[in-house]
Image 1 (spheres, rainbow, N blue to C red):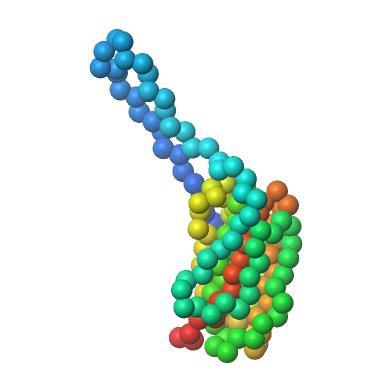
Image 2 (cartoon, one colour):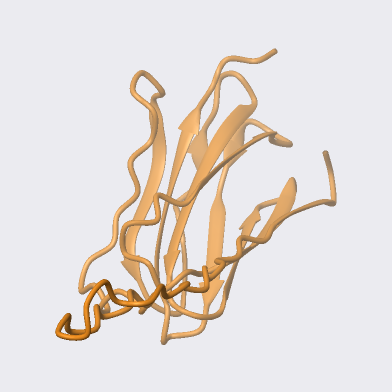
Length: 145
């Protein structure tokens, strides 16, 4: 999968509220629910699926960072990406793929899981996002197909 480009774009939608007439003139109006961003977290981690051996992790990162090269026995990895904010994160799996993903202003968003074959016997992952965003990645080894 040399030079492959994978893109995951996540969007959020708003649901318009519908108001109905009050049951009596004395009833106070009910406040409408509105979506608002979660407060900025100070720490952000990502949790891989149970049973997948962890190869690398980066947590609570702003700006750019990379993992150390790590050996992979199967040549197949899962890259978990989680990003809080309003911009994008770009994650490059060295010599194998690039993943661009939208950051979301929702601290409860679990992020994504991306599986791919890596070129070579090691895997190194680099992430980049604007410093206003907070992000985390985890790389695990998964069985070859």
